[in-house]
Image 1 (cartoon, rainbow, N blue to C red):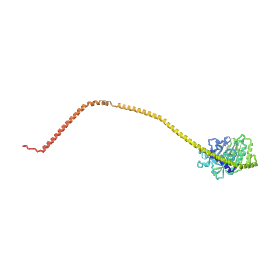
Image 2 (image 1 turned 30 degrees about the horizontal axis):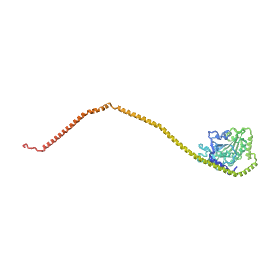
Image 3 (image 1 turned 30 degrees about the vertical axis):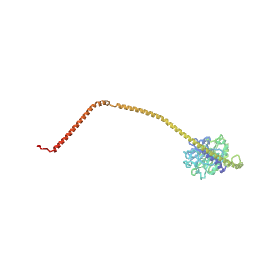
Image 4 (image 1 turned 45 degrees about the vertical axis):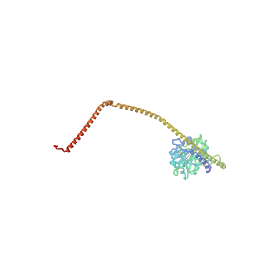
Length: 484
């Protein structure tokens, strides 16, 4: 196996750069209660039927995906904050370990969250409601003495399949030594005992699980008391097998039937549909598998090559590795440069498409606005024409009614004039002419009376003056003697 430095150079440069180019590769979603089984992840169960018997309300089904494809299925316990099992298939031995980039499932803590895929924990801190309420976090492992042990081990995966395994919903707290021993045992059992005795590797279905205990990491995450593996070769001459490792004894690795394993796990549990070959009368394959498991348990190497051949092969690999290292490094540099070039080409094309698209959208938007405004104006004019015509007709009709009303009023008023008034008005000229002589006579009488009155008045005045003068003369002039 490559060292840490080589592992980082080989995988980080390629995988992480691909993730930066296509961030939606890492997916995983909580399967809805209205969906059958594990939805698209039912392919990891024989007959597409998941185990039956896990019915607690705190059990959550997760379909783990990567690069748009299902990679494995997980049944997660929000009470214990660990997976109860992960169902997967063998895809091939890993050439090297992928760089760990741990993810979590946001919908476990916040069912109303609209993120339907795995996310990096640091990206949702402070933004995700109830973060860590129903699932384990990286902080739960820091300084605890436990590491995140994978139920679906990455060492049985090829390339992008490995990336999907690094999720906290696929991890249980294990001591570093136990984690290493468990993954080594599982890897050897699958590759050396199970795969050689199943006609096709895609017919081999694997379930890796953990039995929770009362021991909690930081009072939150349950430490398993037992690790187990169930295998099913769903072929005409199929078989099934169970393996159990007690956490308290790292060197233990007990084999048992799937039925016996089901009894240890949960009453009424059915891991595989139809018992998956347990009723098969042929025991030859099972004997060979159990012998291989026994040799693995005792630490022996299972295979056709003896130790000397393995040693020679290892020496040859080292020599070839030393010779090929410069070329590998050069190839890795070229791959890195090519990926960077592709990355910037994609970025440049995105900018061009974005700019062109924005311009086209602006033009379409302006054209649309102009068309809508033009159609709106035409519509308003067309709508106003009947309105104006109706208004003119109404005005004409109202004017005609006004004329008729005026004629009727005049006629009515004429008809209301009294007949006597009309006769008096018609005889007025006659009576006026006939009255002229009487008026002239009355005027002459008046003028004569006026002159007569003026003469009478003058005579009276003169008589009055005479009377006064005679009276005064009598009073002041002495009388003469009678002899005179």
